[in-house]
Amino acid sequence: MKVVIIDDDKSSGKALADLLETKYDMEVLGCALCGLDGLAMVNRYQPDVLFLDVQLPDVNGLDFLDKLSGFVHRRCQVVMYTAYDEYILTAFRKQAFDVLLKPINPQELDTIVRRLEKEAEKEAEKEAEKEAERVVGAGVKNAPVANGKLLFYTNSVDFRLVDKENVCLFQYNHEVRCWEVVVADNRKPIRLKRSVKSTDLLALAPHFMQVNQKFIVNINYLIEVVDNVCHFYPPFDEIDYVKVGRLYRKKLIDRFLSI
Image 1 (cartoon, one colour):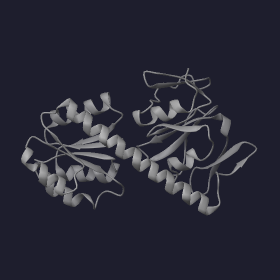
Image 2: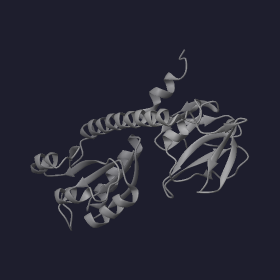
Image 3: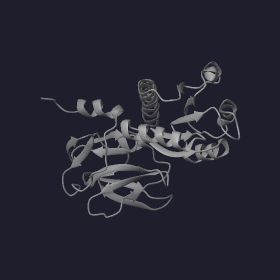
Image 4: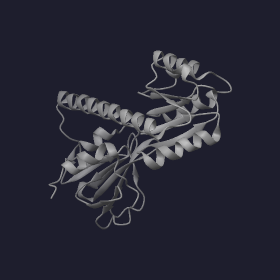
């Protein structure tokens, strides 16, 4: 999950960010020190989760919630993040997902993260169902495949033909906000159109499977998973940055016969 933290205490925000990235399957895209910078960060990154401090130098965090809807274009769960428990009731009335009290209790954080993961899984299932309905309604099963090749549009007019068996993985590039495909005999990943979604890529072939919010792998190349890191057969044996997220681990294991 993509996360933004807004906290005027820099050390406190960094401590939370480190905890979220090291212990949980979360990617902290930025930490803002004030409400104005926080809104700009939310607008830019469109996070899945926002950890929001109540006491900010330029705006009250509860008032910030009223402004948030104008800057998010997708579902964003807000966890209020405060040392003052008197704000809890108001936070929930303003549709906050949960409240995390300072100093952070690791067990409380763990409970909140697990709730967030369950909600994310439900949302993913709903999106998959909607996509399936759209595909069936359009009378289309998969993207065009000819002689085992896939056609990827790289912009509105240009395209690249790739043998689907040469695809190792798809990875989401947050800097340019689009998916890329990693293929054999190509040094750099091929950047795809911004309109391409994970559901589009998963529909290309049954051996493409999502293992992380930003990685979809070809399980035919997968050798093993060690410390939640995927290892692949050559020519992709040097790839060592694909981690299996907690939300996706069970689904990956269920694809194989365990002995």
